[in-house]
Each structure stands twice: as C-alpha cells, then as structure tokens.
Image 1 (cartoon, rainbow, N blue to C red):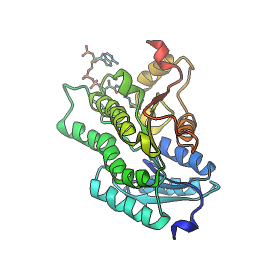
Image 2: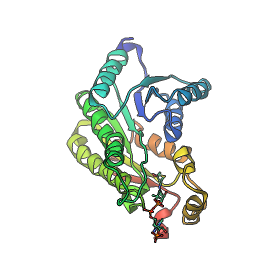
Image 3: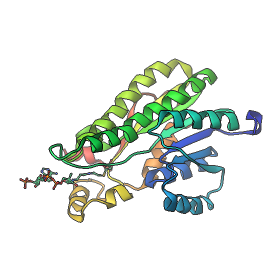
Length: 253
Ligand code: CAA
C-alpha cells in the first residue's frame, strides 16, 4: 500500500490486546486512526478474543506480533509498518507486566524481566519511530506509566522504578523533539478494572478501592480518553506532561 493510499493518521499501540490496550485501540479507531495493535504472538487466546472484539470496531485495525522487549524486533516492525503505510504518526506504549515481590524476596529475573518489558520497550519503540516523526514534522507519543511510579507501591520496587523511569524518559525525549512537531507525554493510570488488578487478592483490592475518592476502579475507557486527548492533531502545545487518571487517588495522601 503506498503512502498516498492512506488518509488519516497511523497509530501503533503496544500491549494492544491487553486490558487497557484494546480500549485504547478502540478509541483511536473511533478517531479515524489506522491502528496497529502490537503484542506477543504467544498470547493466542487473547489474540482470538481481540480479533473477535475488533470485528465490531468501525475502522481499520490490524494485529502484529512483536516482542517489544527486543530491539531488533521493534526495528523490523516499525520498518515494515513505515513501508506498508508510509509513516507512523502516533505511538502509544502500553505494554506492561507486573512481577510483584518485596525486595527482600525479589529475584534478579523478576527485576530484569519487568525492566525489559516496561522500560526497555519504551526505548526500543521510541528509538525506532522518532527519526521518521521528526523528519515529517509530526508525531504524538504517549507512554503509559502508573500511579505507582509516582507514589511507590509495596511489593513493586521493580514496577515503580520502571514506571517512574518512563516519565523521566518522556520528559527528556519531549525536550529533544519539542521544536519538531513531536509531542511526548505520559499517562499515569490509577488502579483499573483489568486482569492485572483482578489478580490481586480481594483484601488488597478492596483496600485500594477504599482509598480512591471516586469510589471505584478506573475503566480502560477512562485511560483511552486521556490518550485520545494527547494524540489529537491539535494537542501540539502539550508536551512533557504526566497526566494522572486515578479517580482522585492523590487526594488520599
Ligand atoms: N504496607 C505495609 N506492609 C505490608 C503491606 C503494605 N501494603 N502489605 C503487606 N505488608 C506486610 C505484611 O503485613 C507482612 O508483615 P510481617 O512480616 O510483619 O508479618 C509483610 O509485609 C509481608 O512481607 P512479604 O515479603 O512476606 O510479602 P508477601 O510475599 O506476603 O507479599 C506481595 C508481597 C506479593 C507484593 C503482596 O504484598 C502484594 O500482592 N501486594 C500488592 C502489590 C500491588 O499493589 N500490586 C499492584 C498490581 S496492579 C498494578 O501494578 C497496576 C497499576 O499500575 C496500578
């Protein structure tokens, strides 16, 4: 497909078939983006569910299997998409895992796996799209961090470090691209109604909900809305920010 055949922005969403990612894809499709959802090939069951879900979306959405913790796979993926669509306008880095354990029990593997998926992936993807975006004079990058990158969380030294790192990375890249039409922002979800939070014990989850002033978990749509806002064509004066979407959680402190 040649560049001239594509009208509308081309968006990549990593972690695109996950709880937040699927909803981000839906929102971007509703905004007439051509969306490419990226995730691991090994999540076969989830891929099938995603493909059934998106069959109902009005717009263009495709799935590409890539391990975003691997630089060379990201390089090959972005080259393939640029070749096929002519460009990449929007990148949303939503791929993320947890490997919760108190530090005294955390293994080097739990540390490294988490950093590779949650932080290295942001480098791997941004590094491979940024030149094209700056050359074309337009780009919108949104990196999904977490409230726990801002507050720290018991049992999450790895996750909190990676998520705080994501915002530091975003601010630095925002400075590098600010005069070139490319914005880089962070969205920090609070606790959302996803499999990641469902995996917590009832007791821990109920304790967390009790601390959320809005009185409920966030919905993936709450997060997708923030991503849609920051990736709009006319959002060019908003860069380097962290947008917390957490039901007023900070007011609990
Ligand atoms: N604050 C203070 N102390 C706590 C605590 C807390 N939140 N939770 C447990 N403790 C205490 C226990 O009472 C216990 O004390 P004693 O040793 O005096 O008995 C001690 O810490 C237990 O320590 P362990 O190292 O043995 O912990 P564990 O192995 O039993 O459990 C854990 C550790 C698996 C991390 C568990 O605490 C846990 O699941 N915590 C929740 C982590 C969490 O919130 N993850 C968020 C996932 S969702 C997400 O990340 C999405 C997002 O972006 C928001």
